[in-house]
Length: 160
Image (cartoon, rainbow, N blue to C red; front, side, top):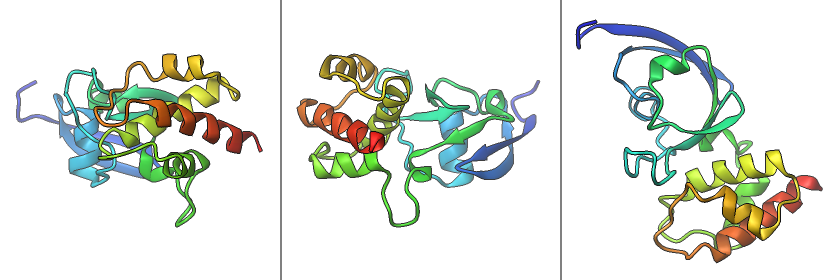
């Protein structure tokens, strides 16, 4: 395939079917941000170290900077924009706000998406479970204490 060749892809993002033509080397995060215009998924390191680009693909938290858009063809994707119901925040988003679990906010979308993956696997995680589950996400501002509190609070709200 020549660099100028494109691949037609189709997927469901936040409940809406989207499609586009991409070069084979286009990353999923680039497709979502640049082609679809959903900029809540951030690019932090391009090496899967920071977790800023975490989203859910077919119900599994993945780092979208490591997945080619073509490999997500036919997938169901949920980004941070797909969590709120209009102006009503998802309980995990509310918990991050209420527990002051963000400062600059750059890592927050990836943290929230990872937090949801933790809670989906274990609805009542311990602080140790939360810290272990967030190991692939970096925050340079908060020191993680309030993030752990927020995940626990979000998990509790989701159980209610």
